Amino acid sequence: MECMTLTGEEIDHIAELARLHLSSEDRERMVEQLSAILDHVARIQAADLSSVSETMHMGEEVNRWRRDEVLPSLSVDSALANAPDSDGHYFKVEAIQEEQS
Image (cartoon, rainbow, N blue to C red; front, side):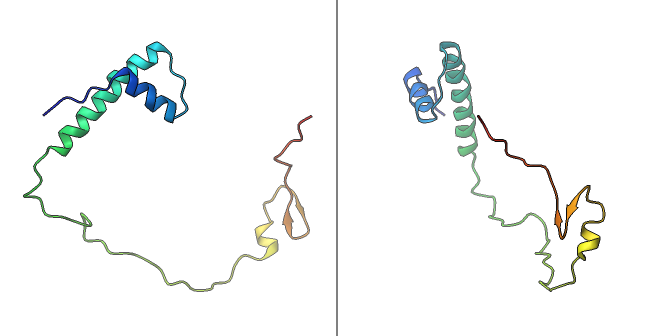
């Protein structure tokens, strides 16, 4: 199995595609780490799986879907019962967006 070693130029290209700005230390660390990841993937791909049968599911479970039925929902009073503040039929909350000056 051949080792997959990336070059600094390849790391620069990957960083450019990802819009990353790498320091020289980061670049060297990425060469080592990404090369190790590619080596690991190569080992996994080299595994002989010819005697392993294909499977969709490991267990015997089947879909446990419930019927799509219309059921009564909460009343407005029940839904708003624990709300800290309300306005008519609505929850009243503080604004989540601030205006920037």
